[in-house]
Length: 89
Image (tube, rainbow, N blue to C red):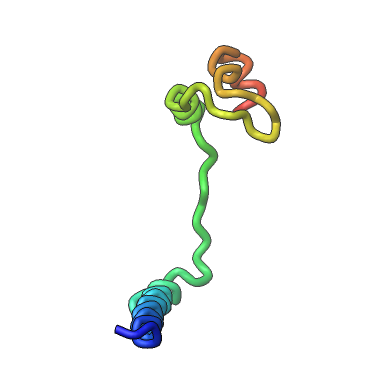
């Protein structure tokens, strides 16, 4: 194959991939109907319970970089229930 033919084939290939990605992003009729059904409906979002927060803290992995507040997971875990209830929850 010549260089031009190879480049042409690659161009066709990538255009077909991009076309598939665009089609998969476009909403279908079912998505549109679902949006219409929920339009104007407010959903109540409840605060997490104390037990849910404790469970999440227990499952957090040690050794991860702290966030912007510079508080590490190890500090949160070792601080105890009272500190967590006061500052985290």
